[in-house]
Amino acid sequence: MKKSPTLTRFSLSMPVALARQFAAFVRAKGYANRSQAVADLVRNRLVEWHAEAGDQPIAGTVTLVYDHHQPHIQALLTDIQHDHGDIIIATLHVHLDHHTCMEVLAVRGRADVVRHLADRLVTAKGVKHGKLTVTTTGNEFRRLVGRRLKAVRHTYSL
Image (tube, rainbow, N blue to C red; front, side):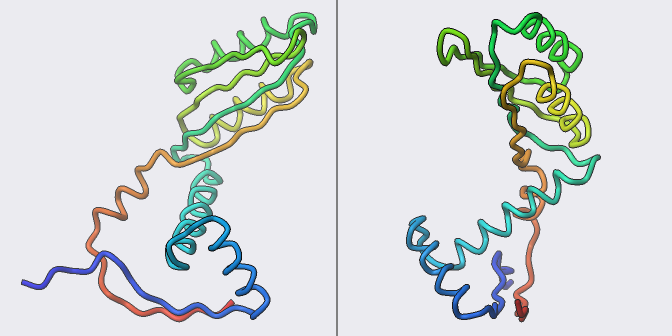
């Protein structure tokens, strides 16, 4: 019985200037080949796409930088975090200097719930900077890896 291939091959067309920039990117990042780089770029965009859908599970970090001398900031951030204990899976607190603290919260849950938490934390009075960084829970890629893919050629033009 013939084993189904796990890869598919397709053509990609793009402007010469873009292809040159892409080649420089591949070399600078140390990819073994262009296919590996394209796969990473597609995977990154798929993670973003899944995170845009409110009901999709995501994982990520919420990073906050704040002045701990700001009245009530630590109590407010703690209260918000206690309201979302079901999606916060770990925290890290770092003293950057005498006044400034950084907190990193590892989060996992539905995209809309995680974004709501991040918005509440980032917009809290006294937060100097905050950012939600999302990644995959890995489940959508596990489903893809487990599938048997047919060898199909696709041609796309950019």
